[in-house]
Amino acid sequence: MTTGQRPPIIEEIQATGSELLQTVKNIIRAGNVRRIVIKNSEGRTVLDVPLTAGIVGALLLPLWATIGSIAAMAARWTIVVERDAGPPAPIPH
Image (cartoon, rainbow, N blue to C red; front, side, top):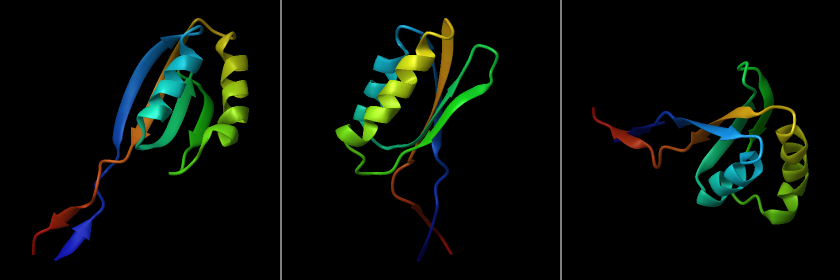
């Protein structure tokens, strides 16, 4: 039996400038996140961060500083979250 890669789960979350940093922290704490993309109110990508399993607090400090500084630039943000879909599903023969 072979296995196939399951496509990632993509989720979009709206946040205000004041909510942006805490929302991203909560998303990362929830786990299973591959990538976070932050877009401004015009839909332009401002930050695109691939995340790997095992990334921990001190390694995220530069990310928190970056997000904190861009949060004041606009009132509305879209956070695109790419999550692992879980273990690959078996492909029947």
